[in-house]
Length: 165
Image (cartoon, one colour):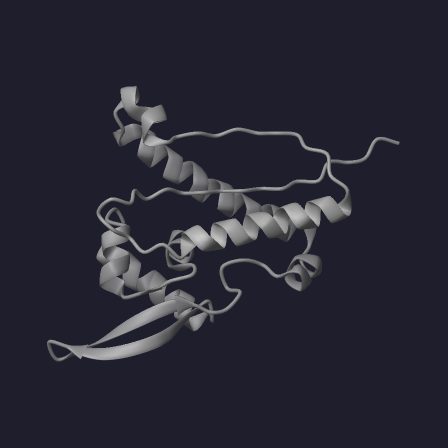
């Protein structure tokens, strides 16, 4: 899940992925890349010879980083729980790694935040809201890493609550 998240919307070599995920052992990284490639989640988008070896550049296959509406409708409640549990576990792992190494006095200054809000929307308002979020997040995901840009993890969950009868 961390590899898919890292590569979502981008193209990277194994070396670039290793730099982005320094806590993942190299053997594990290559093994997981191969599993995702064989499973049709990753694809090779470029190859070049570097020091006599072929270096591949990978990307997530279109739609491989999130479930489509048709896929979400086709899976069981148990599969939804499994997918969400994986998502939540990766999020907790990312959060834990950050707070364990961060200066406690700089958490807010670093931009750490988390919250939960209850909102009321019609179906049309929800669709519009989600489209706006997708557009805005897409714009900032296009930003390339630079020395002045800090890396952030952004997570979003929309859970409809049961309607009162």
